[in-house]
Amino acid sequence: MNKGRRQAWVVMCVLAASSLSSAGDPAFPMFRELAGDAELPPPYGVTATYYRQTQGYRLTDLSLVPLNDVARNTLPGLSMPGLKGFALPPLPTMPTLPALPSLPGGLPLLGLDDLGIRNRVEQVNVQLDIWLFPFLNLYGLVGTIDGRTRVETAQIVGGDLMVEYDGVVYGFGAVASYAVGPFFGAVNAVLTQTELDASRSRVAACVVMPQVGYSCKWGAAWVGAMYQQADESHEGLIAEPGFGAAYYFADLEEEEPWSCLLGARAGLPAGWSLDMQVGGGSREFFQTSLAYRF
Image 1 (cartoon, rainbow, N blue to C red):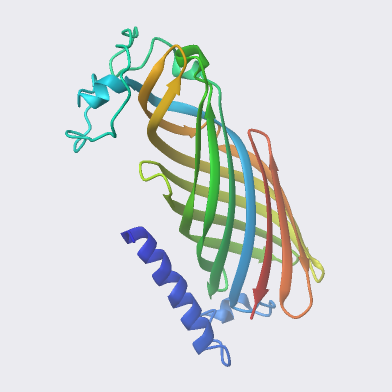
Image 2: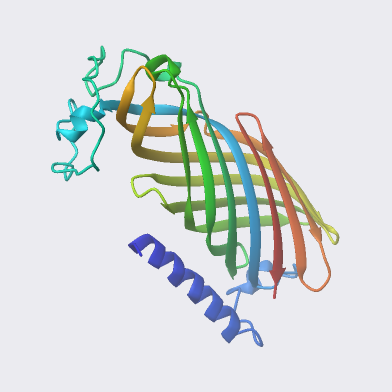
C-alpha cells in the first residue's frame, strides 16, 4: 500500500472515529456561533456516489518503439531508468520492422493534435465528511474506478490504441460555503489518485467546482462549473497487422478543463438526502449520491 493510499485510509478512519466518539454531544462544527441563528446541518456525513464521465483528451507525449528494439534493451530516443535488462517472455520470430520516419523521442511524423482521443470513466466511491467549521467541510473518499481511453492511432499503426483499466481510487477534498438567507455559494475542491490493475498506468486528477444555488426545506438546486486537471499515463504493448508489435508510452491530459454543471438535492426523512448532478459542454458527466447526516 503506497503512502497516498495509507494517508487516505488514515483520514477516513479519523473522520469515522471522531463522528462515533462525539455522536451524543457533537463537538463540531467548531465556532458554530459564527453562523448566528442559521440552522446548521448535522456535522457528520456518509455518502455513496456513482459518477460517469466522457470527455476528449489530448496527447502530450506519445512514443512507439518496435518490439525488436525493446527485446534488445535499446529504446531509441527514450531514457527510462530501470528498463535496462527488461525481460520479455519468449517471442515468435518476427521479421525486422522497417524504420519509421520519426521525430526525436520515437514519435512518427504526425502532429499530436491530429489524433482524436476519447476517455470514459465510471467511479463508485464512499465518502466520510465532517463540518469542521460552519463554513468548511472536509472529506475523504475511497472507491473503485473503471476507465477506457481510445487513441485514434490508425494513421500510425493501422489501428486504434485502446487502453482499458480499473482499480482503486482515493482522495481528499474540502467544501467552503457561505449562505445569505436561502441563497448560497460554495467551492468544492478534491484531489484524487488511483492504483490501477495495470502497474504501468497512472491517473491523477484535481477537480474544483464553484457553485451558486438556492435552498429550501425540500432540498436545493444550483448551477456552476467544473474545472478538471487530469494527468493520465500508460505503457504497454500494441500489435497491428502490417505494423507488427511495439511498446508504447503515452501521456494524456484533458482537452478542455472547464465545463458547466447543474445540480439538485432532495431532502429525505431521517437525515437522508439524494443528490443529482449533470454536466455538459466539453465534458459530459452524470453523478448521483445518497447521503446520511448525523
